[in-house]
Image (cartoon, rainbow, N blue to C red; front, top):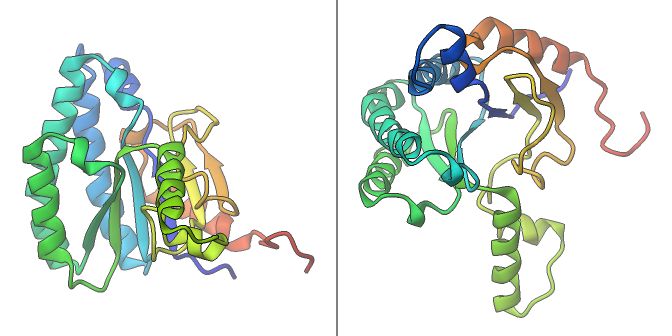
Length: 227
């Protein structure tokens, strides 16, 4: 049976969910989606997952309407403020990947504070990918390698990525119906099992996650070899 250490999720479909429910503003979907993050974080922690990495805001999302971008920044700030108690009560460590230094200063401070308060926890690590793009991450890692002047191999290159020290992605899930990776964890998901579901993120329940995990447990993972 496959060991499950790292789940990564592309949380897609918030805006479409809001429209489907008859709401005029897409932001209602983002608010509802934040509730699913709480539920899945608790569940992943309870079943012994080590890392839950969530695509919260990509480097391409800055192209969205200014009002929506501003709301998403405030939503992340509010989410971290409200969920700190959840992290503290459930032994959850908080981390981020992406170019955090380009976010609003208040959000940067909230992120740093949350990381500091949870740094000693040993349970699940919830990782938010914020202002994250995999190509951007890889280029930054290459530039770090160039500065060292040393040749790198796959293992040492791993240590230059934002995810340094984390286990490779075992399961990568995309909700919302699209079947693409959208510049997400391209290196880390090289041998992950990919699951695409039509379910919109605000409708993605713990039960749906368990269904995917059940399928994953039965997959024969060969990693390029023969069994």
